[in-house]
Image (tube, rainbow, N blue to C red):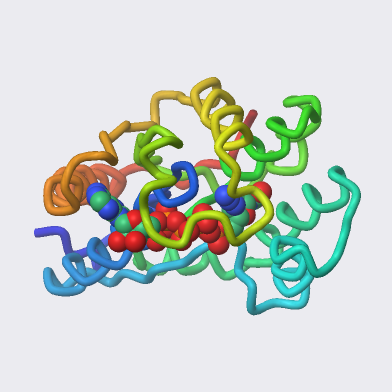
Length: 210
Ligand code: Z5A
């Protein structure tokens, strides 16, 4: 029935380029699952509320500068500091997470950093049960509202990020065409999420092993 009271929660991550619809779809999925009586929370990375998150936020807004490796490690630290994640999952709460380690690796690798170096600080974090990639061409994303304000919002850069995302795909990934109407994306997401919540009940939590 989708209720996760009897077992652990699922870690479901949404990834995709800027303006691919992650925030909108996370919100829709969250209220759908809440309506089904699921124990569920919505999280996002970067979590701009923490001390590390505030440094990241200033960097993204071009209000401060960091060396590429330093900002990479700060994004990673921002995931490591969320020690509550594992406890929530084991306590039966499903987490819908907007961006995770894949963003960390894809964005930094797109700047030219070595991909293995980028993966290293992510090893050992809780591994997602399901990664849903909202696939939208950067040219399409640019037509959507609000593009262009932050540091990484340039088409050429987003294309490189997309290529690195592609190289990170593994068996936990499902790709949804994010250019479809919102309702259609939402429908597909619901089904994937419900299946994942049911299937992960009997599975142990794993760690990212890159
Ligand atoms: N970053 C990093 O470098 N390393 C890391 O480890 C992490 C992140 C975690 C901040 O991310 C930046 O940090 C990000 C990656 C980097 N930089 N970039 N680029 P963020 O998550 O805070 O911000 P964001 O990625 O820029 O998210 P966003 O702007 O909120 O985009 P979104 O959530 O994917 O899209 P949306 O807000 O849901 O939708 C955007 C617009 O499109 C909106 O007007 C919607 O109404 C519209 N939309 C959505 N879906 C559709 C469909 N299907 N059709 C038509 N229109 C749609």
